Length: 182
Image (tube, rainbow, N blue to C red; front, side):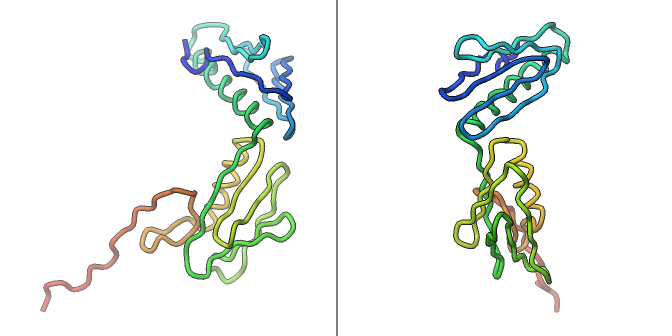
């Protein structure tokens, strides 16, 4: 039995979970999410908990068990609290600003980069070097944060670029020069 899959997901106040026709819908104060569920698992609402059970013992049943439980738990947490990914910008002249819903970045290119906010995602800029990506869908928040990071990933020599908050970039030494040659 999956250790993660057998744990029930507690439903907080002001959150409703509906299960029907292999689709789980979760509504909360921050919004609404839905997720298709594979037919090899059964999702039921039992009192104040969501319980995920598998229909068989085949490998695909076991793998879908824990996955489905985690997806439902992320949906419940997203509509009640939301998710946030933070990015840091390092480098001379590199900065971020917000105009309307768009994120404007100056990243050392010959042109400024504008990143429009997708539906359900909001940006917050703290100072000029910190970006927060907020939303209710954990997968989308992580994907948008990764796309912003890919605009200028941290380089290994000086560490300039966009990185996740707390990310450690291993630096290379660079050229050693002509040591010992005459």
